[in-house]
Image (cartoon, rainbow, N blue to C red; front, side, top):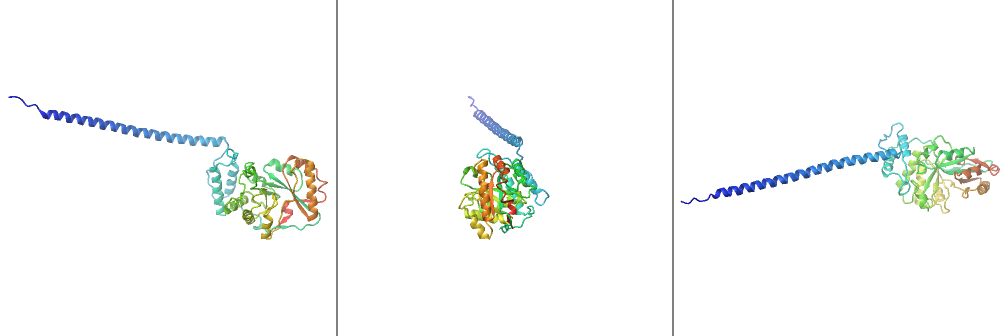
Length: 358
């Protein structure tokens, strides 16, 4: 009798073969999955290490370049908190336009934050001057009065040259800028000085100076600048414009600034860099005397021309009782002033605060 072949064995072998293939496939997929997970973990760790290393590199660059990152907080109300803020403001280095002439955005933002916090909480230094001063000219008795203002003062060397003249000359000091981030410190201990405030002109070159006031600024930004000036120069009373032909010719912007300066106890002296300045109209609105430059003395850098301009200032003073002349801390200007005693004999040389009163 013929034996029938066993079908079950063939089926069983096929089933086992399929099972083995599935297991192998499953194992392969599992291995691939594990490999991918391991790869992601390695990449993640590498990314973290790279970020830490990059952060360390940036920190080293700040240290090497002398830039101190502002990371500490200033608790308003604590003794010296404003002093810390000013010190950090003075440490910030600037860079040239589009490369090395602007603050690092992060550092500038940090200073603005702390400054605004101090302003909002009204923890600013006490001012020794009356707020919202009524500007008046001192009655002229005796000789006509002549005020000589030296603009653009930004360092100790320039200030020493002015003081070495032993004349009643009023320095007008720049707020911190790319010229010097510590210029505000020059005012410490000075009784007679002014703030020389950069304001918008028709020159793109001049308008690049740090924090130059622009006619496009909001009212809040202009007011904040006036408050910042008070923080930087706690004892100052007088402000005049650096350039500013566009800004002083803009009624709305100039009105906002003039009002804000008065509220901070400042008096504005118009450098009169444009004939159509709106400052006379604004001072009239407030019932204040309009005080402005009568002549620049050193547009030409030679002693003869400077002496000629000084004579012109003296003649103006004789006619109206006083005159204001503006010069700059050039070596030739200092030389011309040191040899001008015979020209100035018919006037009384006075500081700006001897001419204006509140």
